[in-house]
Image (cartoon, rainbow over all chains, first blue to last red; front, side, top):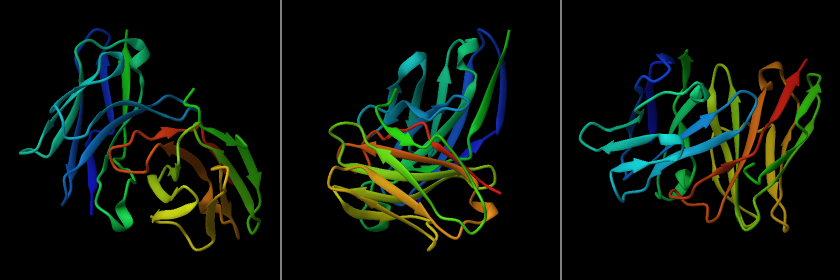
Length: 117
Length: 114
């Protein structure tokens, strides 16, 4: 079974400050990890994903995440927050294990990011 | 715009009723997924289809059923609706239906059961 824990349901930063959203995963098979963003009343949009190539993954809008197997973490960072980054962020895990888990995403509970001027 | 379309956008119905949610995947994608998003359960995987066949099942209630048609669109049927079924239902699609795929999400159908 796979699971994701996002530490902090709400994170608040000032515009221009570092954004750090934490994600830890649990998986008995090699995981693939994703960060999605959800703006109000919209669907989810992929920010970036890790699929066992480079451990430092760069995504859209200046976001990046580093896969750390020893820490079972996949934290999302952005050096300088912008007002338009205010949204809810979801970390998710999947795998290529067969059976009932094939391809499905298991999501964390989400982190709401607020950016103050 | 992800290229995944869902209809209707909003649905308001009464307990005990039955509704059908529709999803059209991105052009070229063979796999469709259904997810439920609610305040208490978060985002939960319901079911996955690949090229018309059921591939994976999650926490989908027996009152719920789905299918993927030959033209690859999918429908999620919810019956004997209860208040607790009120949620946002997302459809996503991907090319091959495997773990490394990017899943593209539709805008969702907001279901309100009164």
